[in-house]
Length: 151
Image (cartoon, rainbow, N blue to C red; front, top):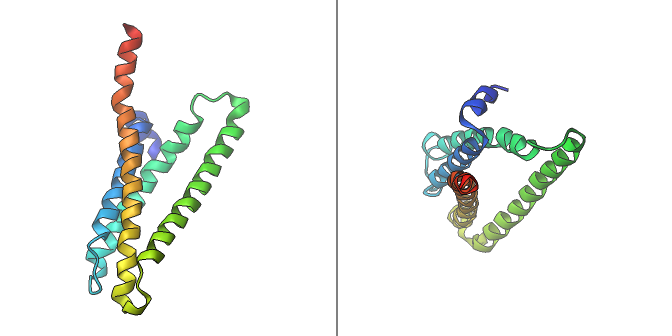
């Protein structure tokens, strides 16, 4: 609810890109985790950055998905958006789990388990970076298209 004024000032696209960038930064900070890494250095920054990223991105994503939709089609747009979130989350979870399983060494103990986590986190990082890049590219292309229309 407190994002409304921020969205009015900054816009949905920039907040989505910032949110996905924050999530990517959180995932990147989690990559060097080790067996003896302390929580407040290894885990807490990741949780804070990804939580902030999701908070910044999801509200504006909902607004962007339903903006400009006729009032009688708002329910359909909201349903498609929520279905996309659910399907995308399930698909990403399946891919990350498959990568984790492929790289985990069951006989390696804690270190073998960690060997599976790092490539799985890398998948999440790449997806967040691709999302941020796609949204960032859209921010840069919009003024060019508006100039082309004006010409």
